[in-house]
Length: 48
Image 1 (cartoon, helix red, strand yellow):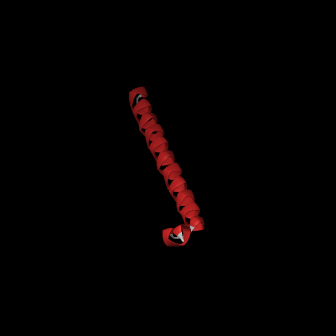
Image 2 (cartoon, one colour; image 1 turned 135 degrees about the vertical axis):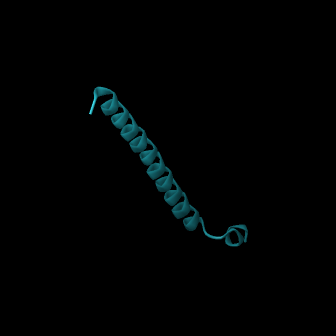
Image 3 (cartoon, helix red, strand yellow; image 1 turned 90 degrees about the vertical axis):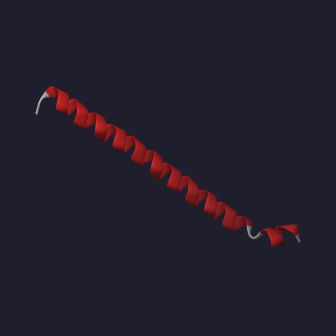
């Protein structure tokens, strides 16, 4: 494998890892928001 293809493979790997970590962080934020929303309870109970 030439130096060029090593560079290409490493670049694709880093890009995939970066996008994968962003997706993981977004899923974590979504789960945290869902948990906080569940703690607040339904809107009807809050207004009453």
